[in-house]
Image 1 (cartoon, rainbow, N blue to C red):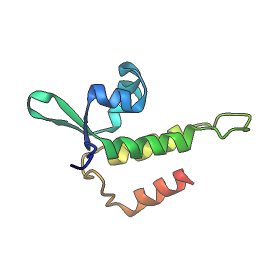
Image 2: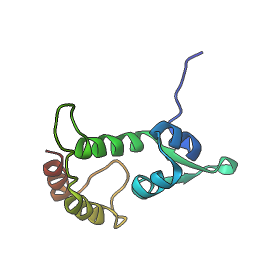
Image 3: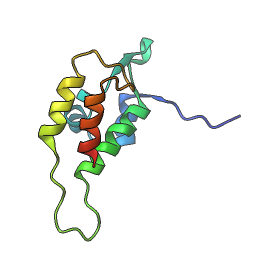
Image 4: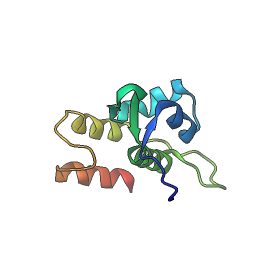
Amino acid sequence: MRNLQPRGLRLKDVLHYCGMSEPYFNKLIRPHLKEVKFSSQGILFDKEEIDRFLDFYFNENGKVKGDQKWKNPKQNQLKSIQSKVSNGSVESGILTNKSLEDELTKLLE
């Protein structure tokens, strides 16, 4: 039998996976994720979506060993992109607006 990793994670598993407390997860990550009601097991979060958010967050806010300072997050640019995407017209995983794609690419550079 194969050792399959679940793609949908329950909250307690997400907290362990991300290595953070529930209040910190609720403040930092949860507002940016879609939640799926999954019968009696509660809410599921998409592991791949969590990975994408953490990759972005670490790249923007991380520090390489030897650097003197932590990077300053580009909060205004990120909030601008989030507000454009959060209007509900963009489906998960599909960026349909070329200008948003360009903004996000510049933000990640």
